[in-house]
Length: 210
Image (cartoon, rainbow, N blue to C red):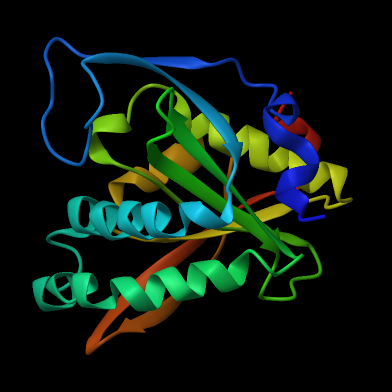
């Protein structure tokens, strides 16, 4: 049985949240209503396209001015490739994805976690990605995604978590508010652009959800 199917919504300890708007927001960021509940659940195979679209839209809104516009403009052309890569992830037992969805099951955010790709002796788990559509931010959904993912990591005997973030990304303060400590930095190349990344770590997963 796939890992996501083993838990269902009962796995999530975070309460259902509620998005509130003063008026209807049109477009992809919020196509449902001006006020609606959301929940966190394990991702399903049929969420692949929605997750890929959230990631592309989030990169555009978050990294505009940081990453070259030519690179960001090319993301839509990679949609099919990203969907296929996402579908392959569902068959990888070392990766788990949770989504933030509306009562109509529209996906507005997601998180990927699993084994640390750096093979770091001090941090056995890694947060690969967490993205929310711009209109879905600021309602504690990001915190709930993290805590839900950490619960899964603890259940699978992981002990410490690491995440990489662009150094100039202002949203990396989110990790600091969750108690992450700076542990490393490196240079990465996107297209022809070189960027700096910093790593945050949580040596004790139990403390992250306490």
